[in-house]
Length: 274
Ligand SMILES: Nc1ncnc2c1ncn2[C@@H]1O[C@H](COP(=O)(O)OP(=O)(O)OP(=O)(O)O)[C@@H](O)[C@H]1O
Image 1 (cartoon, rainbow, N blue to C red):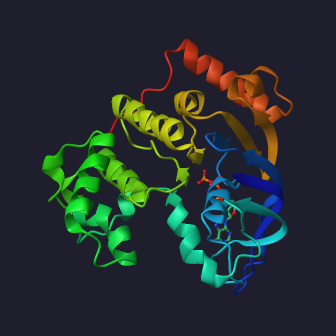
Image 2: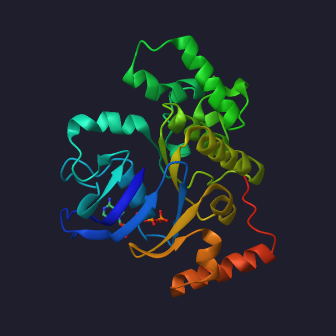
């Protein structure tokens, strides 16, 4: 479903800033029903990879957008490097993208229900409102949010609730591929498990494929089939997470293995919902 082959990505130069090489010769595959986890230090290229897979690097050079300068990635038979503008809307219909800090970027003037419905109504203003209401309610339930918050505005919610609304919004078009950049950031440990459950249910029921960026080892262990560890834009570890950590081939992966081992000895991460 997703085949990344020798992918090289740059941010073009603008003003006095030179071009920046963000990903270099990256390869990975995600078959139907698989979830690839991506981890790596800050600036290693994780969000850039998510943006490219979400279709943000198509149609020439635009300031602030990544550009594929080598290799390619095919997602659902679409070539990301050679995608035509006319294909983009179809592509983004099938590929959901939860951006980093999506919860904080919810439209402030829309209620929860309107924010989750918006991607559907932007494509089809005459979509059946009753069916849409049912879809919103099902998604709220899936991310363990009470139906009573449907008419609330983002400022009335906690950070963790906003993040879960953003997840529901990213899934409302029923994507076949889901790209999620830190989906559990700011979510407490019990809700984090429900997000992992949503990913696993989608995977089992729909043969859904996903790429999940996360620094949370519990998410990576329970929701991914394999991981790619990025370091300065290249892959330095690839395979099932426990195998990658048990046999580190790069000093950065060895450091990760060490810190994950000491975290588990200390009882693991316990993120608190904001
Ligand atoms: N719009 C942009 N223009 C130029 N360079 C950029 C742009 N966005 C990101 N970069 C650079 O590309 C590299 C990869 O950034 P990216 O955001 O993909 O890393 P990341 O691994 O997601 O980091 P973090 O964990 O901090 O989110 C970094 O060196 C970053 O400074």
